[in-house]
Length: 146
Image (cartoon, rainbow, N blue to C red; front, side):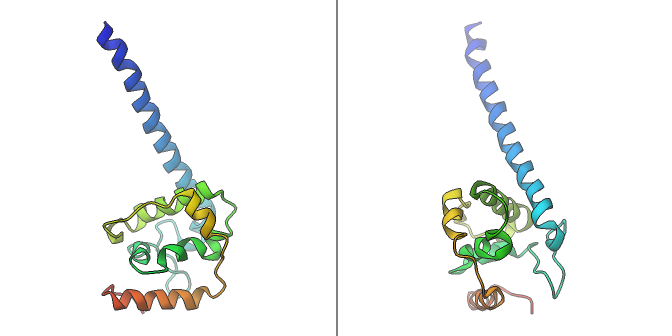
């Protein structure tokens, strides 16, 4: 009986932790639907020639200097009506759901403190900065679409 008493709290703790992770994942997915999906589409494919695709590509930004910052500083992210915690969760969710295979081996998820600092510097020259990052990607052997 003592064995069961010790295990029950451990099982409860594991279930609560799993539920919290699931809730955060669901919150991030909901935030994607509310704040990003309208332009980037439900599957992250975007609109060719108009809205960049996240699908199979977003993770490549983390391979080049300035790319990590770019993902948080683009106006749609930096100016979203989300808390720093929510934006970090959303960005990590998008990376894992739309571009997991493209993540660098040493990927570390965004933390709310990092996001809070980065989003204070919203990009104004988004198209130019993105083009510069795409050139850096090409320089390290990442194939970028025209």
